[in-house]
Every structure is written in structure tokens, then in C-alpha cells.
Image 1 (cartoon, helix red, strand yellow):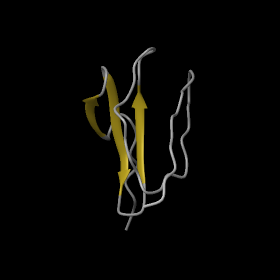
Image 2 (cartoon, rainbow, N blue to C red):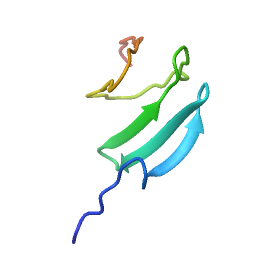
Image 3 (cartoon, helix red, strand yellow):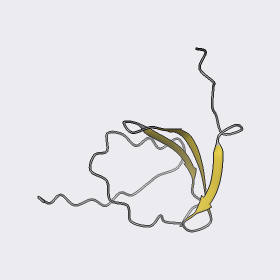
Image 4 (cartoon, one colour):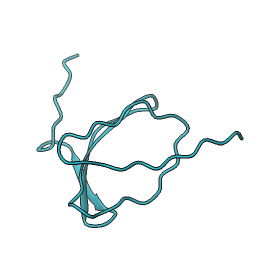
Length: 71
């Protein structure tokens, strides 16, 4: 089976947060890859995940706030 290439032009696109654009490049039970475009001075709503491996900032700067707690 040949894999379909997905990029910003072919991915599912949606809006959210503070005038931000999001493209869902991959979404499975084990992997989620999203490309986000956030204009300067904007922020995203707080998200809680059980596990996060990587964030890549392609242009500009980002500030991340995180807390670790035991359940």
C-alpha cells in the first residue's frame, strides 16, 4: 500500500485559540503530528497530555509552561 503524502496544502485545516491556524498531518493512537501557525503575542489554551516527546519551533520563539504531578 502506497502512503499518501500529507502537508499543509493537503491536511485537514482548522482554526483555534487566539486567531491560530492548525493542520493535522497525522493522527493515530500512538502518534499525533500537527503544524500550527500562531501570530506573535497569541497563546493556546492549556492542554493536558499523558506523554509528549517533541515540540519543534520552525520560526520565531515559544514559551512552554509545564507541571509534573503524580496521579
